[in-house]
Image 1: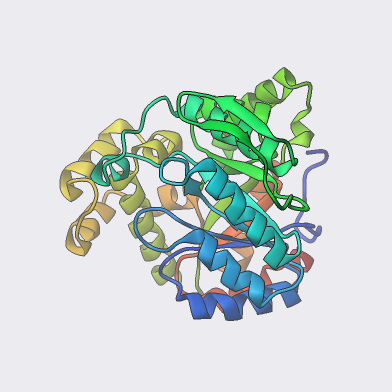
Image 2: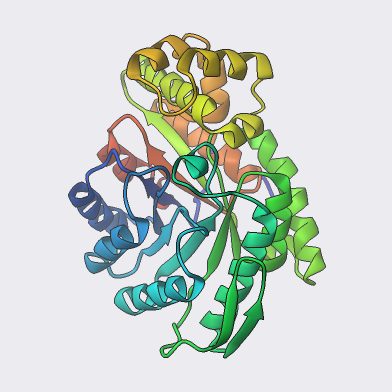
Length: 339
């Protein structure tokens, strides 16, 4: 990454990340403001049963002109690879080359609850990304894989550019992403130290393909619990950490939180889905120090400092996820020119 960033030094790239709690109409308004403010991308979450990310970024693309728009992330299991490529060709046309395809492999227990056998995830990702990139390049594709079978298909309209980002939390998936993808979409609720470990795996994968670490883009989701009311900020942060440790084992593992704490949280909540009352109980096991390790929590100065920590640890574009409902101050005060 070069020299360490200091407070006051500009970051060239900062994006936003939204998911279901933010109404889509509000997102469209925020997208306009973010673009005017110099934000470089907006990524739309698609986890659980909240919102279709492709329709969402189409809506955002219709009200913006320059800002990049990505899915963060859709999964491999329910979309035919050619249909998916066609969807993003359409988004590429609608947004004039601004669409980014973020793709993942879902998580348990969500997969089994909707009837998906989540297996050989590395192989499934390899096949999907390989075929997507061939299709996007205009090739006539012949591919016989375990998960993907394409027999003499070429896109009728070749997109101008659709970069493919692998949503990776585990180190093996990061290594694969470094080998085959345009970028890695790093997860939230992990520490900057986790990032430093991740970089080595991404670089190992890049070397297999004759590439360098700097050839792999590395945007990262970063949960931001900002408020002038610090009690509100920390309460929301602690609640979010408890929720994700309870329901998403891959994040719990990557977070570095002890098995004792994650086990107690799962015992209280019963996993996913759970109730607000149980999350309130589980939150008592998450102190402010833990929340601050995994998120940007507090006032603007503290949040800025945390953003810089993640950039110094290898993130190329922080994607700020406002979790306290205070979106406008983040757009106004945390744009790239504010650093």
